[in-house]
Length: 123
Image (cartoon, rainbow, N blue to C red):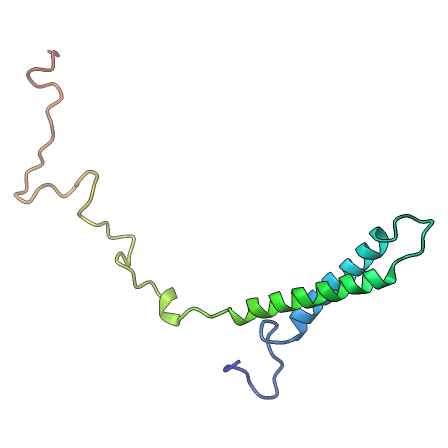
């Protein structure tokens, strides 16, 4: 709400219209479903009292949940998306860790095992 501009409409997340429409949709859905299922058949009269009660409960519950979710929303800080981790560039491979070391050892020699050397049984 701090970034609200006077004279400009609010965004959907900070306006009241979004949660009200969401709650009204679920209230209408609850009204219709309770009206159909609570009557107990087509021979009996529809139960409008239960339908209005179910719609009111659905409206209030979804409005409270939507309000709590919108209040808990927080934007990430700008520096989090800039890439301030340990390995900033994937082009530079770290020279430590597991796996083959293509740079050789500290003295410059590449010590690879001799596969066909003595003791392997191959000639």
